[in-house]
Every structure is written in structure tokens, then in C-alpha cells.
Length: 179
Image (cartoon, rainbow, N blue to C red):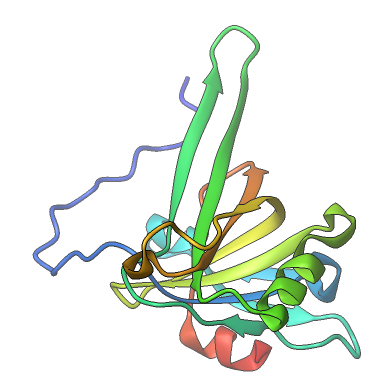
């Protein structure tokens, strides 16, 4: 007996671009996960992974936009499935690159990773799709001055989560309510 009915994947005729256009980050504690809801009733089973409502807790700061240059940042999601133990989870990694080292950026990165706190992120990919990543943590930051003048100085930041499912798609109306 199957756990869930299969859902077809149709070939898309749309253009497909890689990379991240924008990212918005907030403390996980500021996101009211109890308000996380999906489209209901689910007419199309694929819509079950689209968020149409999400709220912040009372008096919480809105999501903060982090800006970076195009073609420098991306994310990956890798399924980890143990057939023997019956456990499954998805490792989600977001890599961000911020150009030009300066004190304000150093401080922002320090705050982002302080106390190994959990973060939520909303990523807009280059296809214009919004993705919600909960329970991220800053796991690495690096880079430096480069060696040649053309290298430029920069910061690299890695956010990592291990969640039960792939990132949820999100409607633009939900994002607007969180900013």
C-alpha cells in the first residue's frame, strides 16, 4: 500500500534561470509557524506546497532584505534518505556572497550568526519564484581581500537547515505582509 498518491511532473516550456535574485531573513522566533497554512482545499496536489498565509509574532521585526550582486548566490536542497532506518530529511544550503568588506557588513554577519540562532529566509530565485526556508543557521562565513586587485574583497556566508521537506513556494502577497 502506498503512503501517498503519485503526482505527475509535466515538462515546462518556461525559461529556467539559476541563482538568487533576493533574500529576506528574520529570526525564526519572530515567525509564527502556527499560522503556516497551505492552499485549501487542495484541488491540485502540487499546490499543497505553496504557502498562502504566514504571520509574524506580535511586535516582531519584519523580514530584512540582504542585497548582493547577481550571479553570486544560490541554494541547494539534497534529500537524505536512509532506507534501513526509515528516516528522511532535506539538507538545505544557501550560499550568499557579499562584495566589498567593511565594518557594517562584518557586524551584520556577526549578528546573523550570534548564538547559533535559528533563522527563516524567503528566497526569490531568478525565475521569480519565492521559496520559504525555516530553521536555518549560519554555519560558515569566509573569504577576504583576494590577492590581485581584480579579485575584490568579499564575504561568503553559508546558511544550513535540515527540514522534513523541500522549501515551500510562497505567494507574493504573503511576502508583502511580512515586510
